[in-house]
Length: 170
Image 1 (cartoon, rainbow, N blue to C red):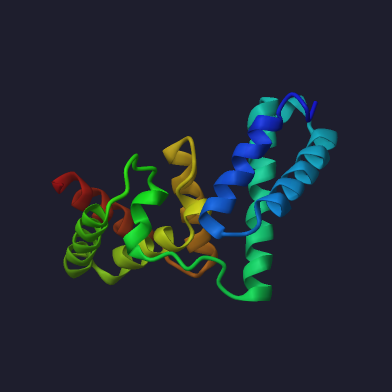
Image 2 (cartoon, rainbow, N blue to C red):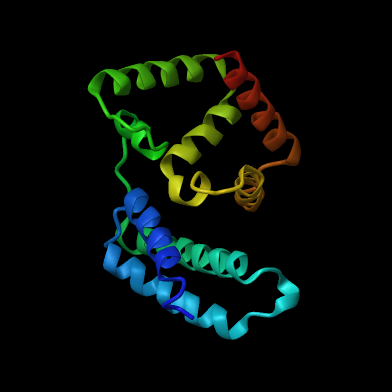
């Protein structure tokens, strides 16, 4: 069945490559391995096959990215100048990058340290936190990551609420 879903495997590997700079071929190989392992373990009671496979490969590649980071240090050297690339803007220009950088600096001045830390975490690990088809799923991953990092429920939800309110202003 791998042949049938090869485009999904490529897409997931490519998304991780774009945001982590890990070699695409390595990520593609890892995603194929994760697919084959998950295919053998699939149980219909766990949900639809494509959803299960997607999460299995994504989880596996997140572990690969974390391992790579632990071995070689930070794997992404993104700056705020290329933030628009993370959000799939069609055209890149230095002017847009400057505007986004200025907006980010403005946001940091008006947000609490908790909200700022959440935003910086998102910008530093976009493959893990931003590239999700369903926003509620992404929020859950962020929440679990923050809880595992020792954040309190109140600070997490206050930070989410503050970011949401700030975004609604613009």
